[in-house]
Image 1 (cartoon, one colour):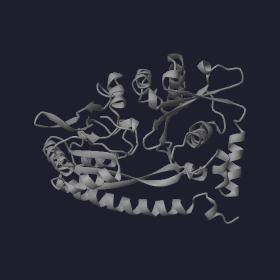
Image 2 (spheres, one colour):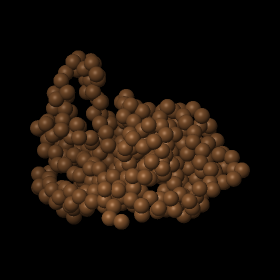
Image 3 (tube, one colour):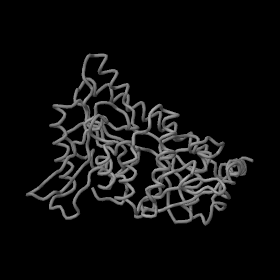
Image 4 (cartoon, rainbow, N blue to C red):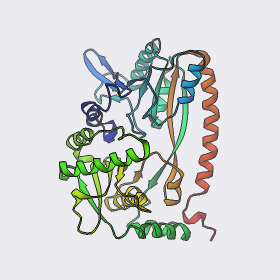
Amino acid sequence: MASANPFTHHAFLLALELSGCVGGDSGWQPYHLLLYRQQQLVAVMPMYQKSDSWGEYVFDWAWADAYQGYGVAYYPKLVTAIPFTPVTGQRLAIHPQASIHRAEIYQQVNHILAQQLQRFSSWHGLFLDADACRHWQSATELTLLRREGCQFHWFNRNYTSFNDFLAALTSRKRKNILKERGKVQQLHYHWFEGAAISSELWQRFYYCYQMTYLKRSGHGGYLSGDFFLTLGRLLADNVRLLLVCRDHEAPEHAFAAALYLTDDQQQVLYGRYWGTLQELDGLHFEACYYQGIDYAIRHGFSSFNAGAQGEHKLIRGFEPVITQSLHAIADAAFRDAIDNFCTEERQHNQQYLTAMRQALPFKQNDTD
């Protein structure tokens, strides 16, 4: 899959497979869909057989429990997603010179999935963009249930500097950010791009990432050191590595690190993975949010997606956005129950989005 979005680029998906992060006993078995017409490849869609729901970020554990309660198998299921990556985007890549209309391609893929649901409990298309959702829902053979979620993204309002961004915030929120940044301002922040990231720097990043996962989750993370090394080799132009050091400390001995990826065509900066060997008050916000905002402003990115976690981003200038996924359920009885669940969930999500938008920290909401 070739794409400006680094996560749907063939190189990202290949790095996952070459490093063993998918396949084997990972719970993600590659089952990609390739559509041909007259021996020409016209479309490709990443897809996986899943034996659990780990690493998806659209949670359906309750659905699996309901199936189990009735003695029905929920796994294996089919998932079209970027493993371990809750990033919105296209999932069906269509050849630009394909001799077949886009709507017909979606109809054919829809038909193939309907056939697959004779073997699998369900298909799940996760973090689809609005254009993809429209095309999927125009294909009629499958009944597709829509779920909504919420993430928090930062948007560049033509800021000229970080201080310019701060000036757009209410005085209270501005002071809070300055106070947070002041706690770690004595540290040194080193940015490295693509081919300039040596194997020693990758090893240091991975050590920080792995130790943080071990402390918080009891395992070393979904992704391996080989994955990051392979990613740095195959997708070097899109990789940005931030290393955090103390005085006189070389980057190879950094005690904290954060990995970013870029979509230069859409002007989007993504902050995905981080780790630290020492917990310092304010360090996570600095390395994963404020440094990213500053980098986005300096390099002209239009938005910054710092990951899936939630409300604490709001007071730091991130805004709520809707995420969408589509789900095809083979069993009609379960489909009706899940449809009711999705309807209620969307209503709650809309109420949540309204409340979050009213709480945005920008000056138009200032009551000071």
